[in-house]
Every structure is written in C-alpha cells, then in structure tokens.
Length: 490
Image 1 (tube, one colour):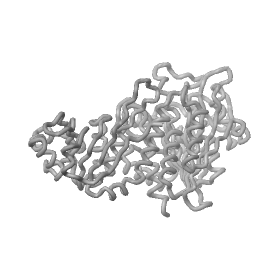
Image 2: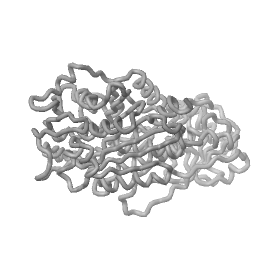
Image 3: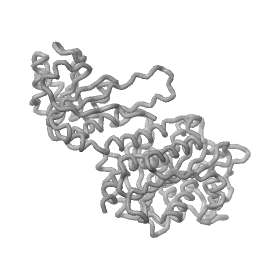
Image 4: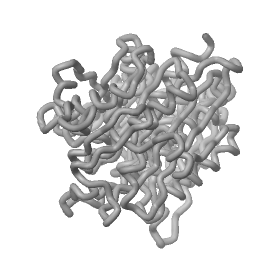
C-alpha cells in the first residue's frame, strides 16, 4: 500500500540554514513581515525574499498559496518556497499551506522553516495528504520521496500535537489505494484479504462466505453477485477499544468491486470508472484502519458487502423477486440499482448481531446525487437529527463537503410493487432520495442512522485540495472525527 512521506520535527538552528539542500520553505504573513528564519534566508540570498514579498505577485497570492524562487544565490538549496500564511493560521489554512508545499516540492526534500508558527503539525498533515500518488500499476522506476523536515522552536510539543494524524493519514491512503485499484486486482477475494490483514493492528476480522450468507438468508445481497465468477462475501471488522460489552457504533459499506449494471447494462463510455463502485466499503476500511492505528477508546464495528455485478446466464434479471435477510421481498426492476440490495442485508445483519447505538452506511449509490450536488458534497440522509447534526459538524471541521437532503412518506410510496413488498427503484425523480428510502426500510426505528451517498466525492476527475485526480478518501477524516468528538471519553 502507498506509504506516507517521511516527516520529522527538529529544533530551529539558524546557523544550519546556510547548508540546507533540497528546497527551503518559509512562511510569510500577508503583511510581509519576516520571522527570524525568513530573515536569515533573506540575508543569505542578499535580500531576495524581502524583494519578493514586497511585490505585487505576493500581494495577489491567496492565503496558503506560494511563490517559488528557483536557484537562489548564495545557498545550496535549489529553491525557496515562499508560502503566504498568517503566523496563527486556522486548521484549514495550515493544512492548505501543507498541501501547497507538497505540490511545489515534488519528491525533493523540503526543510519547512516554521519557527514558532502555530499549528505546524497541521501543516505537516496537509503536506502528507497531498503528497499521495498511486503508482502500483506503473512499471517505471519509482522515485522515493525524500520527505520533509519541519524546523520548529518546540519540536517535542509539535510532535505531541501531530500524534494520531499520521494514523488518520494512513487510513485515508488505504481508502484511496483500494478505490484506485483496478477490478482485476481488487477482486472480492483480494479485498477480503486486504481487510483480513488488518488483524495485525488489533482488529478482529471475520469473513462470511457465500454458504454463510445463504444460511443467514441474505438473498438480496447474493442476487447481485450471482452473475459473477467472483464469490460474494461480507467482512466484519471489530475494534473493541471501549468498555467490554458496550454497544458499538457501526459503519456499513457498499463494496461492488465492479459494476457493469448487470442485465440492465451500463453504457460502454465511462464504464471503466466503475472500479470505484466499492468506494463505500473503501471508506469503512480506511476508518477502521485509522481507528485501530490510533487505538480509539470506543467500540466500533465496520461491515462491508463485497460483490461483483456482472451479466451472465445466471445473473439476476429485471422482474425477479428476491427475499432479504429481514424477510421482505424485493422486485428487482433495475439490476443497476444493486448497491441498495447489498446494503439492505448488511444493514439488517449489523443491527441483528451488534445492536449498534448508531449506524452510518456509505455507498457510491446514485448518479442522481452527482447531478444534484456535483463533486463538492456527499448526500446526507438520516432518521435522527442529533446524529445528522453531529456528522455535519464533523464534516465541516474536516472540510469534507456534505449536505443533508429530505426524506418522507411521499418518496417512500414510489417504491410500491404490484407483486412484492417493494421494488428496488422509484423512478427518475428524486432518485437519490428514493434510494435512501429503500435503505431506511432495513433500519430499525430505534437505530439512529445516516446514509451517505458518496457517488460524487469518492473519486473525481480533477485534483482536490488534498488529493490528486482519482480517489479522494472522502469520509475517513469526518467519520473518525465523529467518533473522536462524540463517543470517545464518554
């Protein structure tokens, strides 16, 4: 899996700056005043820094953006990165500046001269997140990242503040790697293996095979994968970091490793993107890894349904009726609305087995959510205002876009079937909402629940603030924040 770039925190040594190679980074507030380290670089480079920050180009920079002086005179460093940043930045500003460093530095060693800059640990975190690159399928020789050294006045304090952020970044990277993997690499079997390897972190991991799912009556999930040669599975991950016997919080993810649409075949154009249709399961995997790595003091379970949706002589057909684990019958109108069929059984199983005090499912569920919210926000649907508000607050803190949408009986009525208890689609109008209504039928009234439709944010065609093109890892940070701020330490 993709490794984090190496970072360290060292004490400020003004005299050592003259010998630093690679790239130097200095941080200058909008007023253009230089701190001690920046003044030292300015003297060494014969006033070039002062000239740069007094010019119009620096004035026009956004906060957190940078200008670069290449091959500065009189020092061995190949460049000086001048980052426009307040001395007491917000968390978001510090992380943005770190992402800027990652983009400007490439794989070259960076010496970030922070001095007494507040939130230097968040700066390092932002740099790590943006330095991600997925190269597993490329044969060219890979250039190792030389990493970054954050030169600070109080390195021990900054190290302590950074503690846990590297674990969270590893969870984000795990999600990104899984979502970026092609479907011939990340089969249902390989996905289950990747999750089983998390046992090394202290997670209890159990893989339920098809024979187990048949005994449980998961006809809704099993029908999705019956046209594929890849076996369907459910993987259960348990982190018992809280009080023994206390009810856990549950995360549930849709893990369709490739989605052709089945008999309701998708158009050929763009079908290659359907390797990311396991994005919900990818986020659950990343959250569970982060929670285990930082040894969260709460009980959390993650469950993912792993299937492949393929057309074949054995595939489920439009018009077929299947029986869910709950016992409800479902008329399959469209085999390309398969994610909700997977989630229905896993949601029910999670409640029957664990009786969670709250539950959040994630899925790249509908194209309609992309039309409605674009690639800036995930859709949020919930039966519980308190849980929904807590999640939205966590997402806002982590700057992961999320927007709550309505639910209601009128939408639910669109799922009525003539021959079964329900049908799996409710027509084109409000498609994301009727999908959420379908899922809610498999949520017990007493269970606080959120459905996150991440179809627009799991993988994108343009780079984001903290990720290159492709998988974003959206949701790992927000969900980890939700657990940390609302459940740990209670």
